[in-house]
Length: 186
Image (cartoon, rainbow, N blue to C red; front, side, top):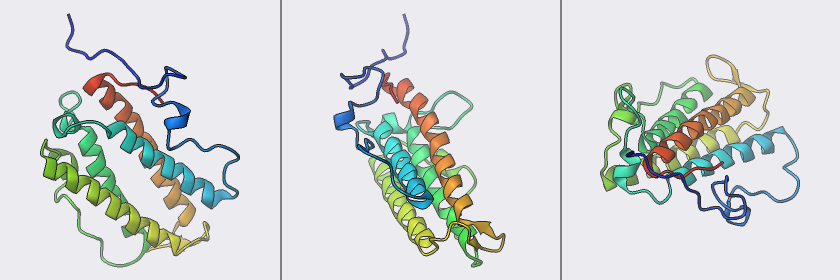
């Protein structure tokens, strides 16, 4: 006997997928965008959607459920962490004083991810706000080769790092979601 949930998916057309293509908001029929900047923006958008999809349908307890000790990782922690990351990327864009951490001390994003509906709502609001603010800050610099901030990091590098951050954490979200309720898929 095991306490592990049975593996399942909502997809019916391709049972190894998260969602059927007709139900997948990331499904982009036709050719991809023209150019490097639109491509990076679309890939980032899709990873953001993937994170949301991996969290959809879960209650606060499920979202806050930790992976395996000693890790403090949870789906809710990932949402909070990515809000913190978005804010931190703005610190690379200009020379102003760094923005304060959203959740206080180091690892506050994961440690404070508790099964409380208000914490869940705040995490999603924080993520949306921070994503929009970082998007707006980078949209002011459409030249991917432009170097920003005191370290002179290229806009391209900032965008690629954001994609990488979401991609890595969407991989974590796959495993976390499967542990919560057994749901699997791309």
